[in-house]
Amino acid sequence: MIILENVTKYYHQTASVQGLSLHVKQGEFFGLLGPNGAGKTTTIRMLTALTMPAGGKIQVCGYPVSRNNTRFKNDIGVVPQHLNLEPELTVVENLRLHAMLYDMTRQETKRRVGELLDFTGLEEKADALVNTLSGGMKRKVLIARALMHNPKVLFLDEPTVGLDVFSRRKVWDLIRSLNVRGITIMLTTHYLEEAENLCSRIGLLKKGKLIMDGTPGELKQLAGHVVVEQFKDERTELRLFPSQQEALKFAEQLQDSCSIRQATLEDVFVKLTGERENA
Amino acid sequence: MAGLRAVLWRELLFFRRRWWTITASSMVAPLLYMVAFGWGLGKTVSLGGVAYLDFIVPGVVALSTMNVSFNAVATPLSIARLYDHTFEEYMVAPITVYSFTAAKILAGAARGLYAAAIIICLALLFGARFNVDLRFLLLLSLNCLVFSSLGFLAALKVRSHPDMTRFNNFLITPMIFVCGTFFSVERVPFPMDWVIKLLPLTPASQGLRAAALGWDLPWTAPLLQLAYLAVFVSWGLKTCLEVE
Ligand SMILES: Nc1ncnc2c1ncn2[C@@H]1O[C@H](COP(=O)(O)OP(=O)(O)OP(=O)(O)O)[C@@H](O)[C@H]1O
Ligand SMILES: [Mg+2]
Image 1 (tube, rainbow over the protein chains, first blue to last red):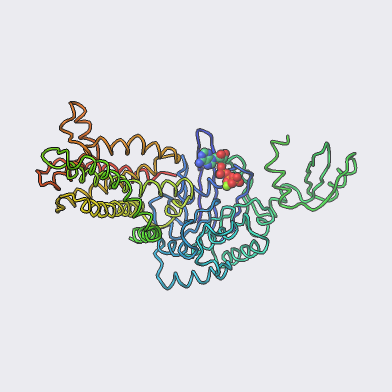
Image 2 (image 1 turned 90 degrees about the vertical axis):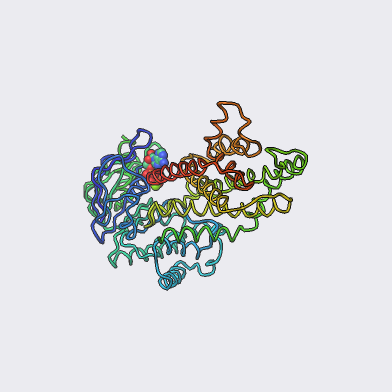
């Protein structure tokens, strides 16, 4: 469904994405993780024809990605990292404009607007101008809008930033149910528990390169299942071990205080993406 | 086609919502020109054998439609691209760049024509005499299209809002005064007269004046406008295909 082959993108001579190759199959829930500036947004922007790569091949839904190719665009939905709603239109007008851009029928539009307002709990704000909504409400409208036309592939760039815990869980449930129905999803997030909960596969980006790719379980396998956190010189040092015994053995010979626990995806993430800086 | 309809619907929504501000602000500048030059000099001075007020009305129509058509596209579109990011919603949608471009340019030109209608009414109230015939309407429409397509191009080229202000200061505002709007280009010494004659507003101000006062229409006027239109539209399309 999503194919990137040796894709490169430069901004002012520095590479934001370097030789990125990635295949996401139909029905997969792929999480793109990485620290700030790793190139996640740039990757999603290239996949949605918002920015052009300097080199490489990009295909979505079997079509080459280009700005004037309307065929693949019908099948994708995008929740961008920054809000891009029409601030001076109401919530419903924003959704209707989207429906018109996707050539939806009047009835279909009405039905979807109703469903999505219900889902986001924004019925009361249906006729409020978008610039009078709170940040979280705007983000909900953004998600609702991306779903209006029932896309086959969803790109979600940090979709749950600024949402309260209830809304976040609701959004999780929704996108998980979409994925169960066969929709391919590519998600970026800084919430590791979100990625661990949702994604069937995770790619770790660092400085524009894919440094690791696998299921959450595989990533932990590679980095170690047990963590020893050592508090040393006012810093926390992480060490990952494949088994409890090895972790204990290491902990015994430490002078500083430490703790041992099961590794989370966050530990793996910190370990893998932070390696060079800490070395 | 869906793209054209959607973008025009959105423009119409904005127009309805801001109808009063749009109408009032398209009246201010033309009113000032007519008060200052029309009342101030109108009855006493004559140029080319006509009262000065009658002489400048076509010029005021030309410059106002330029200003309105240009800014009706350039300002909101540059904001949509640089600040609200709503431009991305259109680029992600399954509409062609052609229908997006066409819709924006047509909507901008329509705003120019709306301003022209207001100015013509004002000019009649001031007692100006002029004919509005088919040639007048043709040149007027072309002028609106030329400058809304220039506005489209500018909005996609600028990197910041101050850039757009500079574009206005160095290109649009000077044209208001030099393109034969308030005086006859024939009086300008060589080679400046040729520079002025090649600027995109001059065919409108000269052509509209010829049509309004029943003079011979310079056939080069619509040709020059068509040439500018072709350049701005194709350059705008090219830019729209790659801009971020
Ligand atoms: N429009 C731009 N102009 C110049 N440089 C850019 C632009 N967009 C991104 N970059 C650069 O490309 C790199 C990758 O940025 P990108 O936005 O893809 O990161 P990200 O992984 O999405 O980060 P974040 O988690 O902060 O959203 C950064 O170094 C950034 O400075
Ligand atoms: Mg980002």
